[in-house]
Amino acid sequence: MPITTCVFDAYGTLFDVAAAARQAAAEPEFPHLADNAATLANLWRQKQLQYTWLRAITGAHCGFWQVTQDGLDWALEACGLAGDPKLRQRLLDLYWELQAYPEVPAMLTALKDAGLNTAILSNGSPDMLEGAVHSAGIGALLDDVLSVESVGIFKPDHRVYDLVGQRFGCDKGQVLFVSSNGWDAAGAAGYGFATAWVNRAGEPVDRLPWVPDHILSDLTTIPDLAKP
Image (cartoon, rainbow, N blue to C red; front, top):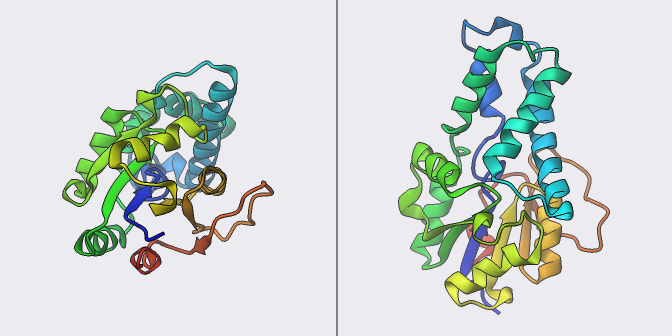
């Protein structure tokens, strides 16, 4: 079945989530972050994701902004930086201004030129996603931005992946789902999407019942994968 619709996870896939810590570390107000920026960014992202899973399992859903703040607070404490409210606020502000990875605009343009639907499917809340899309300047290259808030549970619950077919009227086999999260790509594969895992860090494949159809180092070749 030919691909008609390319759907992307947002944070870590289209948008560089580590950029907030890197940017803050480069600013003169926060010299103490320089040695901890990479560690902080990694811990922040890990806890952010862990909290989405725990909230989904326990039925304690909240907006993605809450788990983003909670994850940051845990990471700041783990790095010995919990007593700096100015740094905390700066990192949160920067999260609303994340830039897309360099290859994203050309990749999305190629998909649109090929006549494919393009969309985001994200744990992010609508206002967060709107801010990221605007900051990255890619709004004109997306047909829609789909948020889990419309179903009230985080990925990889199948109700989230259902949103794609509901929006575009396509079969599961017509969707190429792209994520930088191995667990997300696996969950989407189990759902029935064609999947691509953008494994920028060269991590091992998750030990799950499903594996992604494609493993990539960046998004450059996505238009080739979507060709009939």
